[in-house]
Length: 392
Ligand code: PLP
Image (cartoon, rainbow, N blue to C red; front, side, top):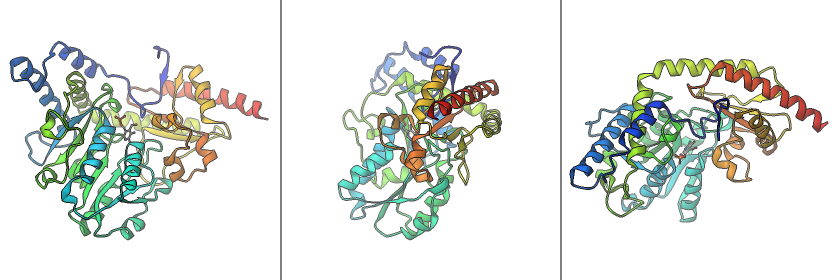
């Protein structure tokens, strides 16, 4: 259990609940109705869902009554992505096209699904992303009439690299306007300004728990044109909730909290961005004199994620040493902590396996302070001294 004294610098794994999210969740806990029920308890729950849906659509820069697309609630970002990828791959309207473009540094919720589709006969082209920059030459050379889907992440969850997704999708659509475009915006939503139109994205995945809302809620934006052309089919089938695209009773309290959190983040957009940029600059300045390397992306990046490589000290060793001092960071992505396999994202960035094994991710939120970064610096310095001495 984290205490008040702990310093949480693992915000890309998940974020603490904001008071806006917590209050919204508590306020709706007594509305136990099923949003699909026709009586008034059900209608109350449905109204809560719709209010949250409108807030999240506003967060995506869309007017709620705009008919360009819909938002489908899911149980997490991973499920939203599975709906996007399996849902378009198994739609009959895809016909013979079987080529999918992606990058070689996607989150496992994309990478593992694409491996599965590859076994089913789809051809997957992975664009290199050395230094956090997608290779546009390879992208252009991969354009082919067999492409039906391009899926690119907006912000890499381990390095913070911000990919030029709009330019990448437009490069594809200029030649193949019918190609479907999906963006995993889990790490970028409400941090990087974008709309589905500015990205030229037909599908956008977002997740609540990266934005100070609870775990167990994600959402997929789906362009109306895809639904009309029957280019996406449901993945979870059953009661027909979420306009038939995601059956299963919705997590009403979690969704209410997601909506409230997005509304709260919108009102504090500029001040949050200035504060986190300032924290990032401060962290780079503070950590630079230490014997470690900061893996800053060569192109654009999101100042919420700082990846560092330690001098031949396993990231896990340092992670536990920092944790003993009450400071929480992660080694690669939280998801890759389940596997012994070195992080694909870091290898794609250009790190060797050994370097990837010695890398830590420090990820910020606007709740962090410079004093917390001072404490990180002192703990890193002390533990580097000790661990380097032990190694000798
Ligand atoms: N995509 C990215 C870039 C992520 O960082 C994550 C979570 O770490 C996900 C997708 C999956 O989101 P969720 O945890 O809601 O399934």
